[in-house]
Length: 461
Figure 1 (tube, rainbow, N blue to C red):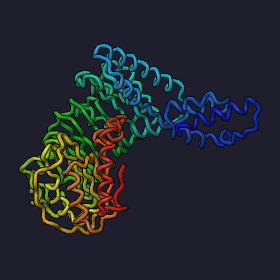
Figure 2: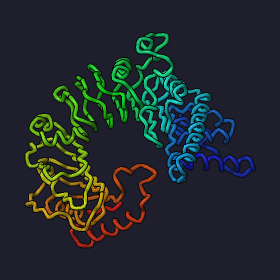
Figure 3: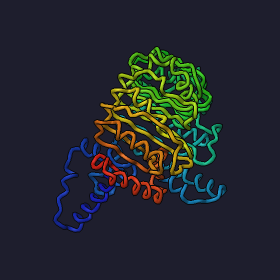
Figure 4: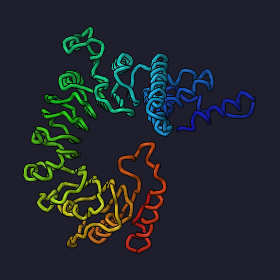
C-alpha cells in the first residue's frame, strides 16, 4: 500500500495529458476508497487529496488515525549530534509532529474512529495538545486508543504526561462531573499507555466508565503504585510493564485470558482468573516464581502459553521441580546469555511440557564465547514439539549445542527457524543495524544444514 498513492498520481497525470488510461479505482464506492486508504500510512493517505476532485476529501473519513512518528525519531537517533544540538533538533521535530496531528484533526470529517494511535517523544510541555487529542478521539467514539510517548532523550519520569486529563487543573472530583469530566468511554475496547504517568485512582475511574474494555496495557508509569480495577466484565487482556513502583494489583476478572507483567514482586490474586491461559512474566516477579514454584503449581497447569523473561541464567536455577504442564502448547523463553552460560539448563522446562507444540528461545548475548560451560543432559524424546524458533542466534557454541539437543530429542520436529537479529530490536528501525554480525550468524546457521541433520527443516531469516 505504500506505493498506492504514487500509482494513483501517475494515472492522474496520464489522464491530464489526454493519454488513454482508465481510472477505475476512482469509480469505486466511497466506503471502499476509505477502507483502502485506511490500510495506508497517514501521510500517504493524505497525499491522495491532490489526485483529483474525487479524492480531495476521501482521506478525511479514514477511521484509522495512526500518527506514528517512529521513523522521524529513528532518523534523529542516526544523526549523532551532541546533546545540546540534539535537543534543539528534537524540540523542532516535536513541534512539527504537533502541527501534523493538529492539521489532520482539523480536516477530519469521519463520524467515528476505529483506532487513534500517537507515537512520538512528547512530555508535559504538550499536555494541552494531548488532552485535546484524547477528547477528540473519545468524542468520535474511538474503539482502540494508544498513547506511546516514549522518551528518547533522558527518560525522565517527572516530565511524563499525566493521564487522564489531569493537567489542566482537573481533579478526580471534577472528572466525575458530566459537564467537566471525560467524554463517554463506552465505545473503548482497547487502551494502551506507554511512558504515560497514570495513578491507580485515575485509572480505576477511567476504566470503570469503559464498560466494554477488553485490552488494557500500561507501560512505564512511575505513578502507578496500587491498582484496583474491581470486576471488569469484558476485560480479557491485561499488561503492566516497567511500572517499577507498583506494589499490588486487585482484580477479579472471570474473562481474563492473558496477563503480561514485568516488574517487582507484587500481590496478585491468580486464583481469581479461572480462564487465564496465557502468562508473560519478567523482572523480579519472574525470579520469585522460579524459586517458589510450589506456590504456583496449581495455577500454571491450566495455561496454554507461557512466556518467561529470565534475564541472566543463574547458577542455582533449577527447573527440575516444575509441575507437569499438561495443557501447555507454546513456551517462549528470553534470556541474557553470558560468556559461559549453557542453554541446556532450560531443557527440563521443555520436558515438563509433554504436549508442547511450539518453542521460542530469545537470547541476548552479552559476551558469547565459542565454548559454553560443560553440561550433561540425558536424552529424553519429546513427541509433540514440532516448531522451534531461535532469536538472537550467533552460532558460537551454546546456541548450536542447544539446537543439536533439540533435533535429537524432538522426534516429530518439522521446522526450526533461526533468526540472528537481536530480540529487543525486532520490529524496530534498528533490527538490521549490525548487518555484519547478522551475516556471520547466517553463515554459521547454514553450516548446521550442511551437517545433514536439519536439511529442509531449517529456515534462516
